[in-house]
Length: 198
Image (cartoon, rainbow, N blue to C red):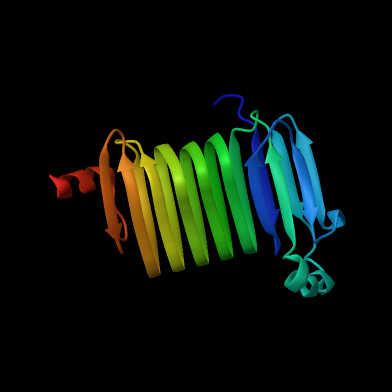
């Protein structure tokens, strides 16, 4: 897309949830707004966590819940990029062009998503794509933990679901009607998959 607007988030230790709404908004739950920097221009929106959450808030999470930032994005944002050191990043209820999300330790999840490209990566923890519809490329990778893909994938789309040490689960429907249920498959493409089935 020539005039794509991008949302970029870089977090250190909060839970981040990104979803679609009519306008851009950020809610801070059990954390302070002062720990974050927001930049907005014609190219998009950047949210950067500048400081880790105070240990005071982490003690409260037992009763009030963990520190969380909830971001709503308008339709004008076409690309969503998230990079997190720890905790979780959840992208939900969005129709967009591209989603790239990486969490070093914790969980990265995309659910109820319709996109051309989806890339989810977690070094230690889980990378989960549930109820996703992907037209071009879908990648779900974990080094240690679990990689899960459930959704509708275009017949000619590229697909990679990998986990070096742990569990890989795939339950996909290929447009228009083929249903595949595989467990512990490391990497596959639709062409190779179709050849195996025929």
